Amino acid sequence: MKPSDFKYFKANSLERALDILNSEENIKIIAGGQSLVPIMNFRLGQPDILLDINDIKDLNFVSESSSSLEIGSLLTHTNAINSNLIKLFFPIISYALKYVAHQTIRNQGTIGGSIVNADPSSEWPLLISLLNATINVRNKFKKREILVNDFFDSHFVTNIEDDEIVISVSLPKINKYCWAFEEHSSRKGDFAIVETGIILELEDNCETIKNARIAIGGVDEKIIRLEKIEKKLTGKNIYQDLSIYKKLDLFEAINPVNDNHGSVDYKNYLSDSLLKKLLKKCVYSRVISNVT
Ligand SMILES: Cc1cc2nc3c(=O)[nH]c(=O)nc-3n(C[C@H](O)[C@H](O)[C@H](O)COP(=O)(O)OP(=O)(O)OC[C@H]3O[C@@H](n4cnc5c(N)ncnc54)[C@H](O)[C@@H]3O)c2cc1C
Image: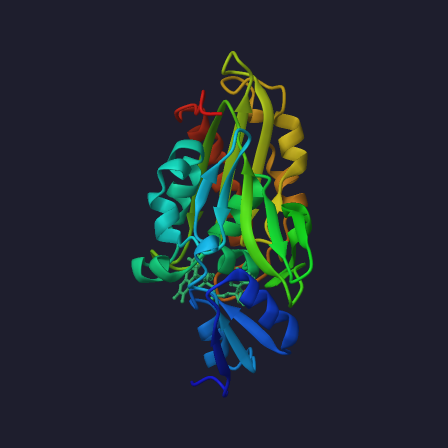
């Protein structure tokens, strides 16, 4: 398949890109092109104009402040995996992104493209949900900070406007925590059928859960945070109390559908077994501390 005709602009500054977005209709930003190009080839999207933002250097960075890590929207999956700052503060990101597709796709695909594409089986949407991110966007006239809870709407739909660019994603630092991530797919490199990430923030004794976060993808129209289970785990001892997890609480929160990747029963089974496995894995993982 071939895309329908389109015009192509390349912006080398953010201001220029925002001017173009403000003045044109039916225009799409292209970053890595790893989702947009297939969409256009299948004619699921037919923009009149593509705006290439790859030359905007201000969008390609990882920086640290006292309270957070900020990741520019053009950072590729490969550069995120190799970033020392990301490895130090959020090793779960470096770990989970290795599950994204194959090397050539990871070399081109970007965090901005992945989160705007909003595939509920993708790794970046799960990671930013788990890490309580803020997404920094702007149009020609103003900036907006969108909490991740308000960013994703449903399958492939977010709450950013057509004239807005994702500038960066801010991730609040966490002091003492353990983490685990895993996913199940039909073949290595395929999109996840189910993906799960856990972060257990710990009290100073490194045993009591101060705050639990669990995110699951592939089983609903967007990434789901398992709030009921998170609340039950908070205040509990990681070595003694994890059996408080009950699969009914999980099944209440997710809505998998029958499709060519599997039945509802199969996805429920996968979700439950991944979660049980990850809770155990989390307990025996290295505690990340003294990095804030
Ligand atoms: C065969 C294959 C397998 C894949 N497997 C996986 C997988 O297992 N897991 C996974 O997570 N992904 C997978 N992907 C998708 C891949 O990760 C993409 O890189 C990613 O989804 C999109 O990033 P991109 O930079 O290529 O965005 P693009 O394709 O360029 O753009 C995607 C969308 O985001 C918009 N956009 C891009 N940047 C911005 C911005 N800064 N501001 C506003 N809008 C923006 C575009 O307009 C478009 O709507 C796969 C892709 C392929 C082709």
